[in-house]
Length: 439
Image (cartoon, rainbow, N blue to C red; front, side):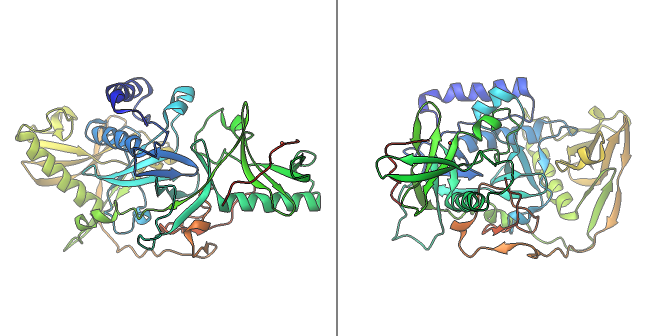
């Protein structure tokens, strides 16, 4: 968290990254200042301060109004069930920490989520086959026992890299199992490593805590995956998480409140059912639901009115269609329809989508541009969405504190904010002071 006096410098950093690293790079301080922020977001062990989130929200909002329709970002969130009650038009934008951006210049897979009016919905992590919602934690070190009945998060804070207690316990169980069975795995003769604590005269074991669960495509992950370890004794009188860099650092245990993230639910009033005939647009490589079209039309009409009221003159969209295609009349104007993040990559297409209106608010149609040609999408009657959340193959956990936030959910059905535990893929010496942190 940067100090107030460095506010202008931080804004310049954002502008610099946007200019040189493209629209899929954004930045915010990844250090949580517990004295300044009352809360912060935790995404698979990586924390983001409120200030970092706000800077990225502002940048996402600016790009929503200015990025070309062909841009990869901002993108449409393909499934809004993570945000129960939120509208069907949620937009995602990459959020990264400053250090990783400068090192790798590779976009991460953490996303900030906003609605069309730039209200914050929350943060998510996109994995290969799943999306997980980040949690919001209180910065207070102690749980307020007099407050409301809130869930709690318990874990270890290693210089703003977090490991949940559930993940640590699971790692210990794996280490013990591997040691007892002498499994012929890649860990053979390597882990668990044996050690000895002089102060307690006990033999200890250590096992690496993987940091490559973080969604950064970085060359640093291999190094980072051997920085953090859990060290424990057979009787568990010694159990601690260590960070090994130049010195050995014992990571403190934290137990804090998980704040109810009401951001998305507060947007529910904008999500009213569409009366009458509901039609979806079927375009090349992408379909748009009737509710998504309706919300974008409402947004476009509002912004078009503000444009004529001399507001938001610095926004590129909405704009007149003649600037997009010469065959369109000057009375027509359009608003970009943001496609889903994987739609174009999956189909290997170079397509942009627009919503075209005439006059002040008359809807003309949905169009797509491909190979320099503008074509109209088909409007088809929409079948009511009967999606139900299935829990087959997922184990619900009654206590959110047991949810492993350091690994991706293994199935799409695990979408509720209270989380579930899904099957997942399994993934150094003598010390003096081996006292475990007080739990």
